Amino acid sequence: MAGYCSNCGTPLEQENAGSCPECGVQIRPPEEKSAGLAALCSFLIPGLGQVYNGDLKRGFMVLLGAAIGTALLIIPGMIVWIYGTYDAYKTAQRINAGEVPFGATGGLKMILFAGLWFVASIVASVFLAVILLFIGYVP
Image (cartoon, rainbow, N blue to C red):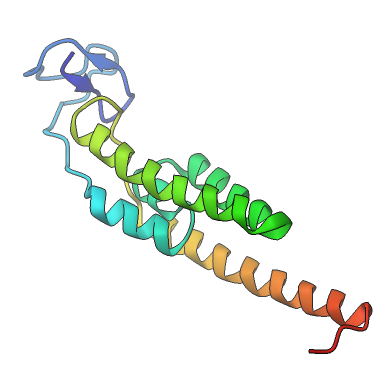
């Protein structure tokens, strides 16, 4: 197998196919994803590496899993965060090997995702502060 069509994701049978047999789009050599950059993005913000790899849904799932896990017991959230970093790294390698369809990065999606993470972090901090004040905890 030679990889996937960058437009529709159809598996390509020939290495040097000129166009996709399904959608007819011209096949161009796939761009390389940086596995290190994907891991770094996911290490800094959970799920951002998945967004870099072109999988917004998976990025949201990693972010949500890390947030819920951290809110509940901290350790599960850290495990999801570490797994997300590993997953982003391995997925970028699989994209470069042609095992997974290439997904466009979309810098705007990455910026919006990071902004969402930032706003959610602030909201969660304020929520926690309100709960601590309500129960009378004073550090």
